[in-house]
Length: 217
Picture: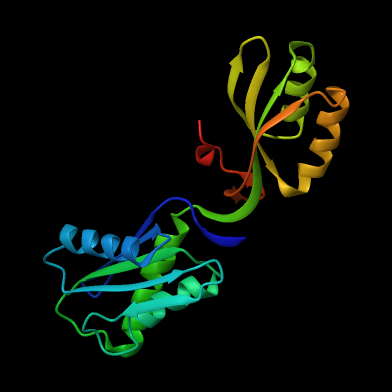
């Protein structure tokens, strides 16, 4: 279980004619982070600086930052500190700076890179990746109505419903609800319901609610 973002975020601030544009993206590997950094560099080839930071791993064990020729400690570290303060991981940040002709000083740079990252984070979707069970079940037609009511009232997503001589479907169940569902399914099927698949996965929750866009169709 870990905290990250589900969707990219962008934030922009201008200070003494210098423009700072912050970009955030969820990533899971150093290669993905480097690809994202390269893409932003290509998007802003005329920018003076492309300062970066990323954190990887469920416990945030991999941390990297780059000041990209800004004074040491004024760009990459402040960006990284924003991510660490929010306890985020599997995330990459890039802040692009277009120089406005006026030096901001070390304190001004720290505040600018911090603020650009914070604004990007405000526009991203922060989520908690939590353990779920992805299961595929098969059962007889007479219990479908009751089962459908149960999963909807317990906010359990149901997908891939197939109708043959029996009904099969896929469910995504949080670990908190897993034991209760097992007992329920055994009861309503009189022990004759089948589990065709049982898989442990991580899915994103936002404010305790499963992100619907993350549910495979």
